[in-house]
Image (tube, rainbow, N blue to C red; front, side, top):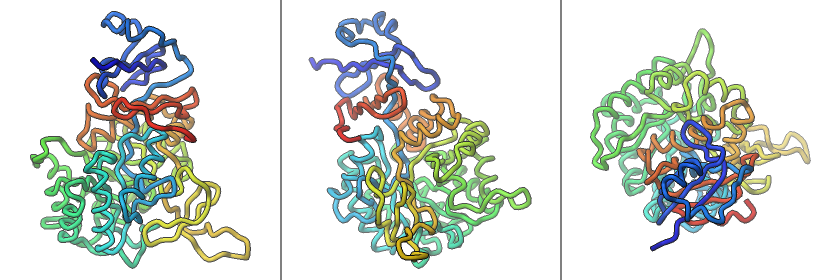
Length: 422
């Protein structure tokens, strides 16, 4: 009989923190999570022997990142082998992200299909949960770091080809509702839901009404569709709310107003890149206050420079300069010796635990920030109860941090992850 694994500390559960808590895992699954007193009553006393209290640590579920373009020097939109991509996966895993979608960026169709096929290899062996395609059906005006030459109108054929190349592991796709061919009968949104792929509204200059039309269509389709996989999908998401969108204005509310309203009624989960660069912490706190933690998912939008030094990187067909931890599209130098940092933000350089810490420092309650980086994205992926939680029966994915929410130990399937240098 296999021995039980025991972790003790301040246990962060779905809506509370257990100050002297304990997690017991057995054969890669959570067997118990609760107070030490309850653990003793449940018969776990022998497993607790020689496990001292750890009041200076937090015990969290493994984090779940829905929007991640790479890290550790590896760019998911540019990899040509699964081995290359693993450098990015392991960089984030060592910091507590135990479930991850590998995100692509806008590129030529043949490139997207090639990258999807490579990343699908990692999904097939369980190293990542699947893929997120950010583009190419996006707004030219709100394209951010996406190559304008590769943007295109909605193509159902490309959706089907990409889903096939991903071998069933294409989980989400960012689309702009105003792009021709995206919304309406026979369009991209319809094809995505039919393929079991979750549409995500983003990189849009559309009106409130255009956003509302896409949200209404996708919400109705998700409710009506019985997926062969037998798991609930959704609700739909908003790709990094505020970033890459027409700004909220009181006379032209644009897509932000539609997304906040949809999140408030439970029809949408909004992504926030709460890293202190993409959004002011007060914006993050305000959205949590408006729509509640269960409709917010914290993401990194990380790119290759996450966890490594400033410098020059590639993000698909675009060149990126990272200066003082901020990634921007490279632009001509204003003067000799000046850094090339004047272009739009080109992804993040934080790990998801850093985003959680930034949200907490900005006033978001700890349990809310953790839930939005664990249980909420798990629900979006149809994995509620499997990952992103410490409830009995869940996969034993665990992040142990110090009192400042910095990683000290990571478990995946109940097995220790190498966090050296994390």
